[in-house]
View 1 (cartoon, rainbow, N blue to C red):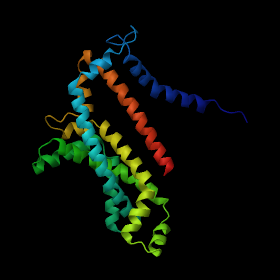
View 2 (spheres, one colour):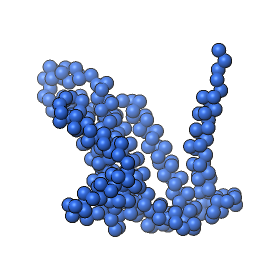
View 3 (cartoon, one colour):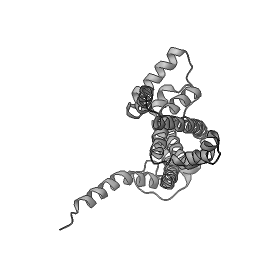
View 4 (spheres, rainbow, N blue to C red):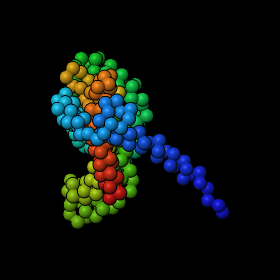
Length: 256
C-alpha cells in the first residue's frame, strides 16, 4: 500500500507555523536594527539595555514571587484534592469535581471579572494578595488533574502492605504514598509555575498599583516602538526558560 505524504506535510506545516515566529523573534534580539526590518549586524546591545531596565527586573521579581508561592500552594492543595476525588465517592465529591474542573473550561476574561467582583464585594484591596489568590484558583485545577492521573495508576496495596508491617497511617502516607506521587506533584507544580508566569488576562483584572507583573509590563512596553528590541531580548530569555521548564516537566512525568 502506498504511503501518504499528507500527514508528514501537515505536521511540517504546523511546526513551521508554530516555530518560525519564535525563530524570527530570537534572531531580531541580536539584530542591530531597531525595527527588525532587515539585518544590520550582530549586537548584544539590546540585552545590555534589558540588563539596565530596572522596572523590568522589578516586574520579574514580583512575577517570580507570585508564581513560586502560588505553585507551592497549588501543589499542596491539588494533591489533597486529587486524593479526595480518587478515594471517595459521594454527591459532595461530585460537587468538588465540578469546582475543580470549572476553572479549566471558564474563559479567562470571565474568571478575571468574577474574581474582581468578589474582591470589590468583600472590600479587599487589589494587590499581591489578590493576584496570588487568583493564580492559586486556576493553578490548583491543573495540579489536581496531573496528580489525579498519577493516582489512577497507583497501587494502593502498597499502603496496606506498609500498614501490615506496622506503619501507622501517617507513616504510610509520608514514606510510601507521597514519595511515589512526588514526580507527578512536581510536574503539576512546574505546569502551575509556567501558567502563573504567563498569565495576563486574569492578572490584568485583579492587579493593583505597584503590582505590575511581567506580562503586564511587556504589554505596556509594546506601545512604544523603541522598546521592541528589548522585548525581543526579554522574550528570548523567557522562551529559553519555558523550554527548560517544559523539558523538566516532561522528564518528571515520564519518570512518574
